[in-house]
Length: 349
Image 1 (cartoon, rainbow, N blue to C red):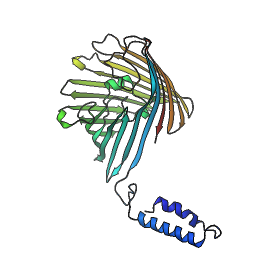
Image 2: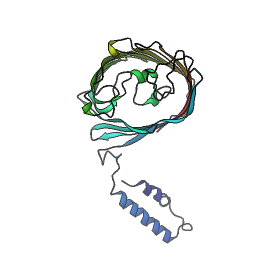
Image 3: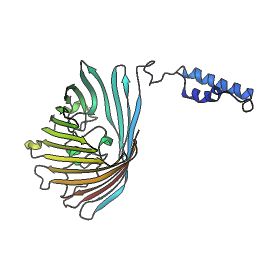
Image 4: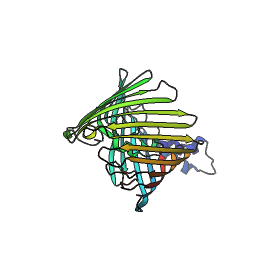
């Protein structure tokens, strides 16, 4: 395979050389450089060439840079810039297997995220390694696909996160079925010595045009606690509108009085601008204050890879510390009236 530098160096030769510009000595020197580069390139194999090598590599990722201003409702405010997430991902094929490996900088830490192999065996898609299993629709492996580029409080509190294990899936006409056995929710980068395990199953139904219905059940068995979770959700798309609603519940401490409902709507004004709104309501057993948060915002797409998101969130109640607020900008507070302003530039590559 000819090195890219060879092509660049060959451009003047391909169109002919003006004798007034290049004399014989310069031409000979350039031809020698081209020949040396060509000989060197023959000793390397491109990882993206399936013909010469069964291993391919695609590099992708994203950067989320934002400004956050938060007032907890009592007059105490926090503000500042941060790099919310910076992720790099390598994916491709190893012989007949698909693979992905990704890592992410969050705050001052670098953590492994995805690390899995997958393939199709007899019509079943099988994935093994570390990944986000299919359970709650609001928790995805790539937050840049979410309308506001970030996880909701509900997704962080009830979502599956990353775990290590196996997942088998298959599509049956309008149904897609997923089944997983793993180390349990949010157990990424753990070891087998933790003796935790979990299993989950999800079914999606998309027989109706522009409508997808889903439901899932999961069970967690850890050294600290055992609990079950279930969720139902629906997604509707038409005429530039996108609607998603999901309900999720868990029987923490043997009580099903732990649940949340989150709804998200967006409308595309044109190819660049999108309006969105999100509402969350949640109940935790033993907590006096219910989650009651609303957010409105606008996305501006400079192009397919650069998006500017601005949002304003308001909490109608206090937010209990038992909710997972990591990286959201929200603060636990006993008072209502908390508001949150976020402005984020998101770049994907």
